[in-house]
Length: 161
Image (cartoon, rainbow, N blue to C red; front, side, top):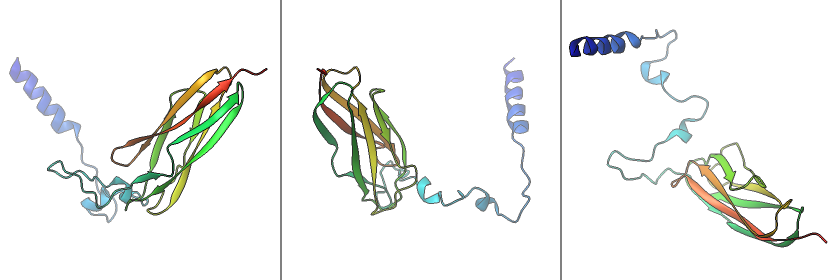
């Protein structure tokens, strides 16, 4: 029984992978190169010994990470642009930004931010049906190490008269 299972697995592996003929003049190595200028974003900084090669990394440096909007009225909308700079040596790509609440909506640049360039993440907080102290965290996912960072919008919401 073990022999039949082993033979079945070997046959599946050997017949499951088929060679794709090379239809143009690309070499085998060229066929697997990232296209469209994305090669710089695919650099893996982790060496085989587990250390990190920090010579070619994006670094997300924030102008500020906490915005206190003070006291607003229930139903008001507050907007803040959190400015940042890529102080690293590789293009910065923000993949996603998510908040802890549906009342807080982040917008982020979709294009890579080149080294030395600046950008901003716009955060809108809607105080509809909110009351009292508010502390909303937005998590940014990027090609940095570590791959997440956070910004916060906070303040107090009073009842409308």
